[in-house]
Amino acid sequence: MAKSAKATIEQRKKELVFFLTRNHQASLADLADALHVSPATARRDVNSLLEDRTLLKCRNGQFALNEEIALDANIFTRSSAHYQQKVAIARCATQFIRDGEIIGANASSSVLELIKLLPQFRDLTVVTNSLLAAPYLTSCLSMRLFSIGGSVYLPGLATVGELACEEIKKYTFDIAFSSASALDTDFGLSISEPHSVITETAFLDRGVKRILLLDSSKIGRRAFRWFYSLDRIDMVITDSLIDPAEAEKLRTHGIPLTIAEL
Image (cartoon, rainbow, N blue to C red):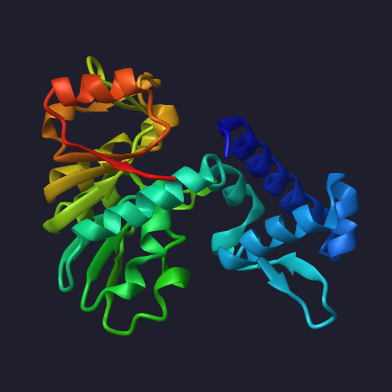
């Protein structure tokens, strides 16, 4: 599927979610009319959103938003950008996790896709500052989940600040999974939200292995604030839409690169 087609699907899903925030419930025919698409296309979008628990099917056969806090429409706007890439990257990342490990997981939307997949493992310990993580992990009774305290950054539903940072420093992770707003091979990792810098840094610093989950749209760019050196990253996992020239730059700089196929 062409990249432009994927972008169209992502935009259509956002419009579908926003339609349901205003109308609460709708039939498949209502959704098809609202999006100006065929019922078959609407059905594919709805099935995708049912699968990731963004939507629920009501007893009357209509569809509604899942009202869990983790599926707030504002959060969906952020997490749905490049959604297919993030899912592929998360699936790829699971091959590096072993039962019984201690996992540090930051509050990025890319890492949240990995968190959704963690119940397949046994006896994991997961430490995260994401307030969205718990609903996805309740089915895994062998897991130990530690939620980092601190000031809450409401737009991202994550804990940040000095208190969060001090708590993160008490742990050591077998793997620290993180993300960034941008990666430039000369500049390093940068972030658009400077209030998150110290917690993002703390997670990476406490990892025996540091793995970055980063969709290809963020590679070859710089964001507002530098926060980490690339030479301290053990692996970058990205998707197959990465610019080949940028992939070569990473390899030339000695950064192990794993590419998730879409």
